[in-house]
Image 1 (cartoon, each protein chain N blue to C red):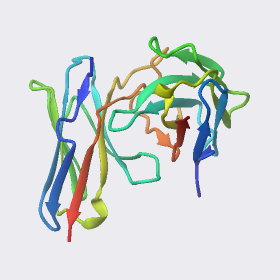
Image 2: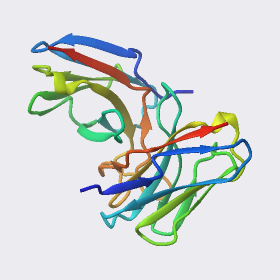
Image 3: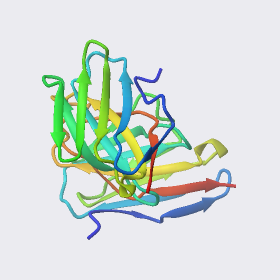
Image 4: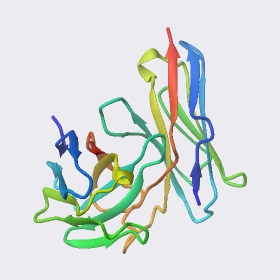
Length: 117
Length: 114
């Protein structure tokens, strides 16, 4: 049972345009969501996050939107640049997790973003 | 400078031959995690350590073991690798293990089982 899903395996965008990556989750206990970016031959690196008490978080060209009622989040990249080409993972967790949870991340399958010059 | 280091980057083993993957960190973080990522799938948590406290995920096979001899190092032992264990193995750390803590990942070890 996959609790975090990224239904688009790939996305292709022209440089300068907006990239929108989507993620759905099923576990209503998740209250903290993250996006990680992964280049080939490197590990995932943290990009941006959002708490369930917010519906939007912005950091430069990156904005994450959260729709709790729909259990859906999205990552917007504006404007997209060729250097943004990577695999993007959505992840979810419990912000106050401790004990045996210790910040366990549940990941989606990833979306390959290609930004064409 | 690399903060989470994994060795080797590529590991080839034979079916049933034990293999050990290594992870080290320079961040002095309390928590270390091992994830398994199969092709085109989501990374999946196998287990984690909070300091020396070991926590196994319920669905992690017994074939997978881990050791954390000190804060800096953590090892993943696969006792009898099967073809289905071929995957990328990712090590990660976080300072306190709270959900909002950023996890820092190593580059991964790609395991091939012949």
